[in-house]
Image (cartoon, rainbow, N blue to C red; front, side, top):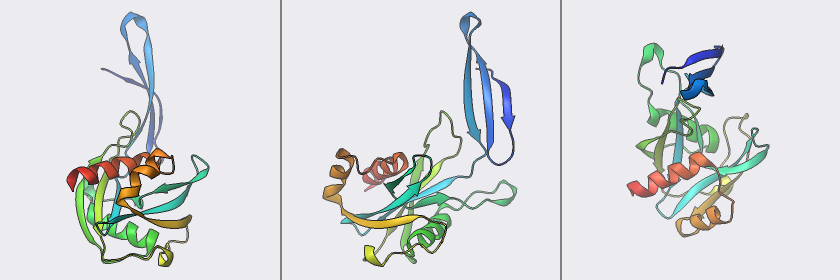
Length: 179
């Protein structure tokens, strides 16, 4: 479908308001966010539990349980991002965990109706984790709690509304499908 840009904001991620012609002289207006950095989400597990962190999310003005995640590092000259290296950095920054065995599992598109960036799902295998000992290395991360959730209890967290973050839910499903 041909689209005409009605408004474009080019500072930072590109915001583009598109006008798409429909039958009967009508138009659909659609906001897109483009040129965002790829992200990474990390499923931390020892095989029996998964690690969740409770992090402040300004858009919903509340703390949200989620997997550690963040943006990838920009790559010069259109190179390919290194999701595993980005996952190692984010995991260290948000939890202090270093040296986990990392495996790229695949990608998810968080909201392809608006966002053009993808999120790469990475599994981080760890021997043992003490949730009480975890601390963000990055002082700008607002994480107030970590939880090691037994795999048998994860669906209960989803059913009772404790685990509602869409990227985490999609990453969890991909991780389960790849196990």
